[in-house]
Image 1: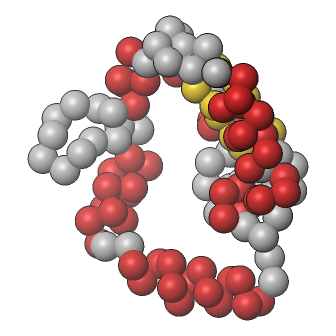
Image 2 (image 1 turned 60 degrees about the vertical axis):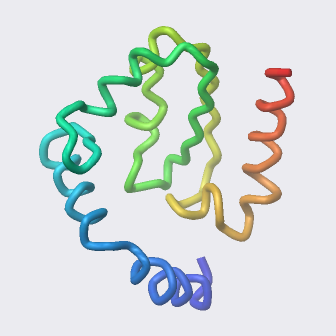
Length: 116
């Protein structure tokens, strides 16, 4: 990532995230359960109910969502899961990085096309 991209993400990205989001992510990290504020249901547990096709995109360089965790197909037992590994990309780079339109978006388009 270049310096300008890093400055943009820190100055324009993190300041737009409310404290509540950080608290939710902290609870998720601490408990392993992701909940909507005020709800008691664990959203991650609901992944088992998904029956639609699922695309899981990961990069071994993503330290926030490591490949081993993010490509966990067992979380979607009723779905047709397609894993895609994109090397040498960080967490944000996967969808919005400068290489994403060339390296990731075509994988997503190909997957969507395969569904029709």
